[in-house]
Length: 106
Image 1 (spheres, rainbow, N blue to C red):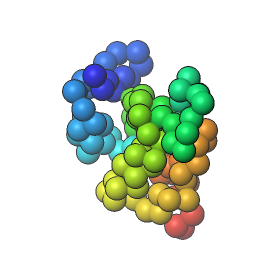
Image 2: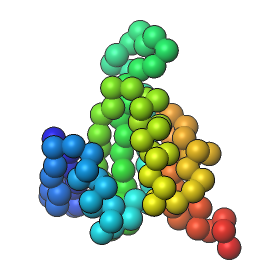
Image 3: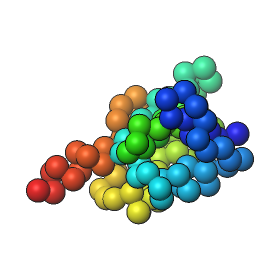
Image 4: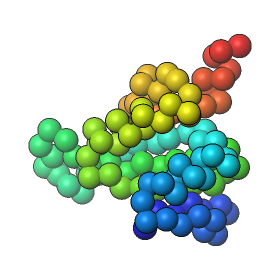
């Protein structure tokens, strides 16, 4: 179950990632954090990842991906979130910062 929470209250709930996409149409995603799932060690070539989405209104959603590379590809596929996303794909760090991209464009 995917939940988007704002100030501790659930504002959106869905069975899949569609809930994040729907909410992002209303409130744009401003940051994405990716953290490796160290609980699955030893990782072979690819371990899972926790991805936290932060929306413009301050809402957040945390999703667990079984594969960090799938998380990376899914984030990059969100063309409507703005480009270039690829330079923000770093595990254990901010991978997408809309506000930073916009400030660099000016």
